[in-house]
Length: 123
Image 1 (cartoon, helix red, strand yellow):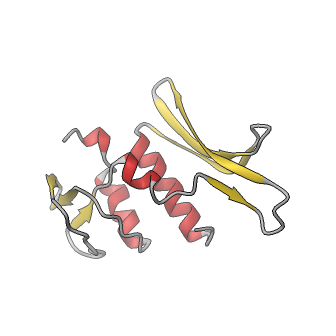
Image 2 (tube, one colour):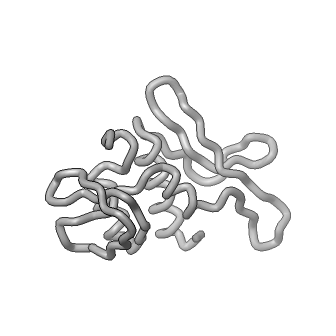
Image 3 (cartoon, rainbow, N blue to C red):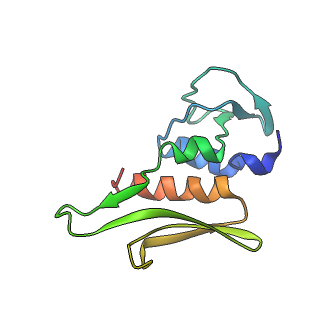
């Protein structure tokens, strides 16, 4: 597996520390990326961390969000900007809602967004 296709070891640790458990086909085990089949790991504080693919992270992120009153909504936006990825939520007029996350690799950008939304209690 190409390490660019999964979250980095550091972000995999951050996901575990945030209490975000993701079923994944790969894990970081003592610094090495290895395949795991049909297992869910809850491993905060150990040396084994799930290494989710972008598609596994996208399953956890809402494609759209609205406020409590329902008077605005925004959609998840992924932009490949030359040598890095930008992920954010944008309203119908393409205004960024909340924070824009940037990373060289898409899985890391999605993981950062998932961690932020979880910590902020939005998901």
